[in-house]
Length: 310
Image (cartoon, rainbow, N blue to C red; front, side, top):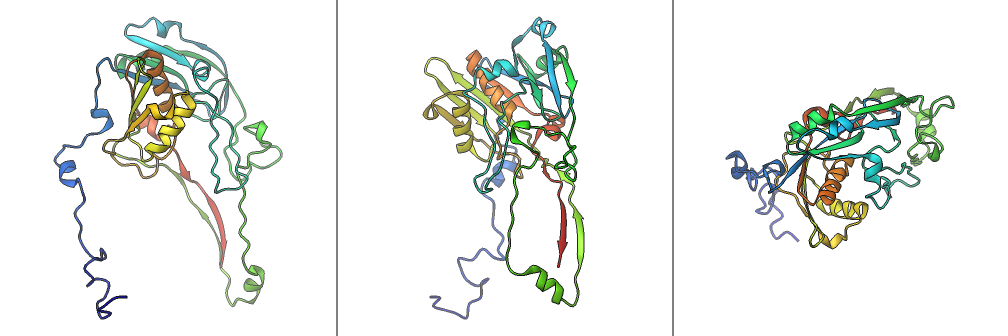
């Protein structure tokens, strides 16, 4: 019990309310002494770039990498099918907090079908990011466009294309909260207001984009990953399980994070692919998303339509 009840919240010595607090590490950051993933450079390091699907839904008919493979300083070109062989299996992104939630199995890169615009299809690993991007422009992919379902209002209609037929429909989950007699309360109310609210789609725009540097040591099987991530323990578990590396041999180092706003709490296929390239080559491989990639491939949020009545 408070020995002096006359003190208000602002007077109490252990209260943070209304106080100006210095941020730990702020002086180092504003002095330009932060250390981010892209600041880390390792001997024999390579860089990854990706060829991404320009379509929201398309079948991959053929991939021609012959000309890209002939470019100097290109160390590795990997397709989604080849990467699949390095994985223990696909992952399924569901949350136990949403009962009955459905999610299609997915690999780090598209295998036979691209299911969203920007999904990685081919990875190029080269001496520099510029060399990798130049080689990526020489990759020729033959697509067959498939029907797209992009309107949430019609996604469950019978005539809408089911993007993942094995799931039965396009519904991810349904949650119903039934509390009290709503209709009775509305009927007895003096005034009832109804409105529909539109929330536009958006994504976080952190100063530092997504970044990962994977360093696999083939002599002892240890894997070190430097990554701009909010969830290093989840990254350790998911990457170890997906790529078949013992979890105790996977070390995750999250240096300074140049912003996130929630976008860096997810597992991204291109980051898993970059790590797989390091394992295959036995050399460090870095991937730094550029701003266009970030807008296209970082997790998106909202885009809700909400009808409310009060």
